[in-house]
Image (cartoon, rainbow, N blue to C red; front, side, top):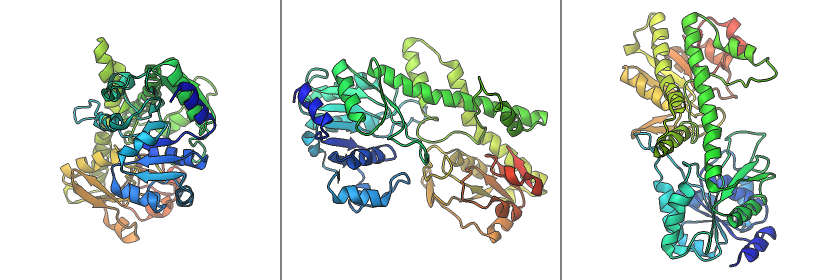
Length: 436
């Protein structure tokens, strides 16, 4: 297929789009294309996900069951496990996870495997877009060469671009349609085609000079957040030592109308971006004999916050005359952010591990997360009852879900350690709250 023909098909919404990976990034994107009337095929190796989509059952909070059923019934979105169907597509978008190894190095095996599957079926004239967050250079250094094992050449026989996701789970205001995205191709034609495609589902698409620029933009966005969260977390620890209220100070600083952006302290960072992206950047920088000391230090500060939370929690239990070795802690919220069911890289996981290492018994309650698995040990969400609250030595608020009655919870608890300032409106009513 020629450049002009693919361009025409995209503009007329006749291009068939394939999404590889139907997780928190891929399924919402597939939905947007399908809702716009664009024929979309969603691929995933997880048979259960494919079956659920086929039944119109969403497993992601940001995707509505009714809307999913509608696009599936109208054959606008077809779930599939047969990657041979990739050959029938005009555009392929890779939306697979990019975790870290245990030694904090990029683990690109999902991207590699997806690219290998695409290489088996890729044909001339197709556009491939990588959407997974990754280190700078992945598109041209990893994805492109794998696709070229097909005998085709990027930039000559197929088009290749990078456009990072900007998903904010649970955000009611900003969705795919009204969140600007950046895109950079391996050449101008790839950039133009990717821009035209993404403009079908996103109001504003910002084209960049190359795929590396788009990759670096994504890393910068999340490293910016990591660094600023680390700053306020360190300030929080200093304020504790000085006997000051960090929440009061952040709130006061936020009254400055220019030159300041408030970030809030917490038990650590979680999700698929902030705990990962600074390490992608630091790892890639070493290739250029550059050491990102500041960025790496910020990531370490955030990683150490669960240790600080556990220390404060054990101290609070001791202070209430209870032997921690005989104590049970109830963690409130294990999702990495409020009002979502995503617990990937949640600081709650490390907190649970550390508390158990100290000999404490740990329970958790999360209205959005029925169960979690830590090193093959399964934890199930406990019911939040007056009896449980009365029985546990300490309630530890890790995630401040909105639809919880904090006054009732605190009123029935012995001690409350609050990592999220969830109890700010009831501080004057209770003396058993310790804010971190």
